[in-house]
Length: 88
Image 1 (cartoon, rainbow, N blue to C red):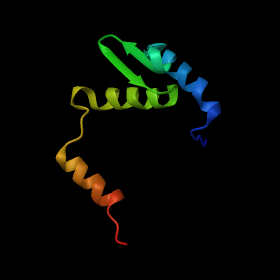
Image 2: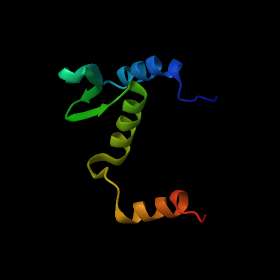
Image 3: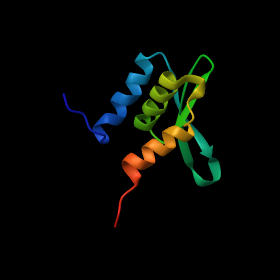
Image 4: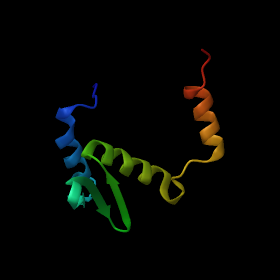
């Protein structure tokens, strides 16, 4: 199976969140600017993102990493050295 982020994955991402037991809603964040965000809640966990695909990723991160979801200095250094460091 091969799946890539595209327009045809938005609705399946929404239903994946529902199947995982989340209540999902689209909420108006900035009424004067007509900016919306997507929110998934389950128990005490609340995740927000700009679209259902990103929301599913935030939920997966929160479920996997738990309360200690924030990156550590070691993780930052490792990621930076592996993916962001390059010579010109």
